[in-house]
Image 1: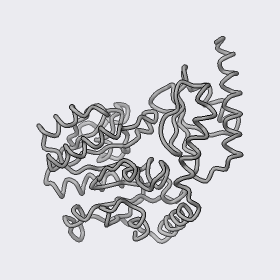
Image 2: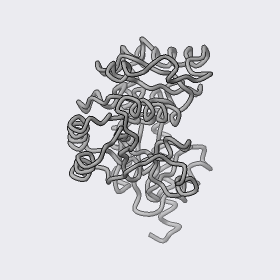
Image 3: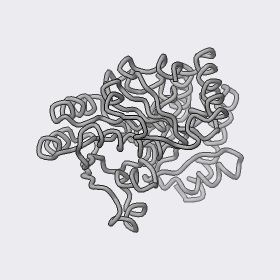
Image 4: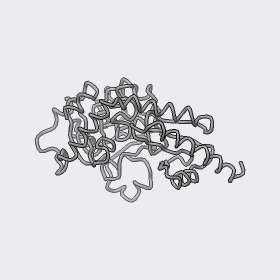
Length: 308
């Protein structure tokens, strides 16, 4: 916990350990409701925060939400990067928290604009609403700093992390400002395996290697290398650091399958034209070159097969 705090934004002073990203988001939403005495959550269209009931309420996609609507907590959705809509909702509503992914990975690496996040923070402060950064995907150095908020100049009250935090060992964490931590009483929150010895050894080792090998700056180098080598072959390259979206001028499904058949694992997204890349921060240049070579070859083959 001390190591995480030392790498976090200065307002972060407390850490709660759990087991996954959705559990971290559940905890953050619960803490915000306790702190404010309110229940409604502000979330954003195309968001993904998890599949358990608390975080599912803030997840946009109908395919995840619809079977459970009667059990979900009250949530209002507004478009990402629409500052006026977010400010208007916060002014008129009585929200416990606004939860936002700084980069919506599942949506196709759609980034929240820095100016939007700045205005969102101002609107949350004015409304007494807790600002939560869901950094399950952007955190742990993946976008160039431990928390993406450190490069954006934003001060969220709560930050959630998981996924790469344990380098494959299941673990999640809620990073809290002292303002939030002061409203937590003994017994308010607990989890059987949160802070377990194996997970904590994995987190410590992960963070020490990231720091000692300067892997946060390496993440930015990986992004620039991929962008430089594929940009002229695609519509756009989105994201930041080792959270990369490659937008094609056609559906990506065929090339995703071909890449997997060639031994390269990539992800699809809510945008059918976007391929998601989430390489490890320590991916060597030789493997990046291999990806680019195979990607170009398969993209050409896909275009030829389509007669374009």
